Image (cartoon, rainbow, N blue to C red; front, side):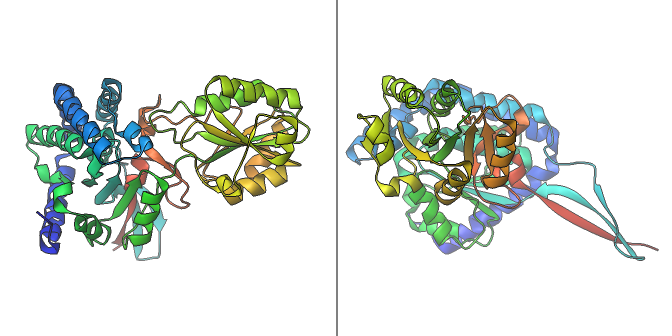
Length: 416
């Protein structure tokens, strides 16, 4: 049955009320909810995988792109990663700053302080990646936010199985299911349109292929935090080592199932020797990569395929790497700022001075020097758990984690 504007508005209203109750329960209960979510997912793993098999079979009939099918295909390892993240979030305690931060005396009559608070209601619009619903739910419970989920139709049965586990965990701790609202395929495409224009939603986070993210940004009338994937650049300076470049490129692509920070473009200083470039090419070919190159490199390395000029500004999202010669770091930085997605870019160098210059020239949100930019949702530091990356400047830049779901509330107080 299609959703009506009235039904949708009422659902958002119920979600806001449930979220206020969630915040009032405090950090200890929120930790118990997160632990229950992990336990429920564990217990439901077989039914979730069965639902996923049905979605995969249906995706063949729907002619779903191969890339999306790879994202859709759940494994026990992917579910276990979500379970581990929920338990690590449970162990963090309150993600907000409990001690008010003074902002000083604003006048003779007024003083004030600031405190960190939840944004309110977060909407997560995503395709495939069913386990991300559980991870996003964990981030929202830990930060005290309500959550609206709008998954892709290709994962409808898997999404429903995961939602049932999350709702059961809320009920286990005496919380309303309304803390997590899911828009289903049966509610029709109008439901997503209403979500993108809902007054009660404080932030929308789209996740998936570039077309989905761009569509949400274009259509939404409420704030959007766009995620970014692929099209990361690496500048191989004249002093950089081939072994370092090889390690950075290969490891960056191992952030499966979605290589968010995969190095897809390598800009090579013209003084780098051809045998070193050949070493990179042969290593990548041996690993099953397709390698594209500009005219200069094709003249020296016969097996390189030509690159379409438009490819420099789009992500491949597969095992493809493009190479190009440049005459200086300044030229490389200019190309990176113009064409990369801007969330992550890299440098390989043996010069400390070059590293400093690179950070001043390149505008990307996160820069990696002589180390792999491989993305992990479950990093060593639990507080750094992230759903994805963004190139957006301002309050949130780079990793989209707990900090992206919080804001600052200022409290002003009159003085006697």
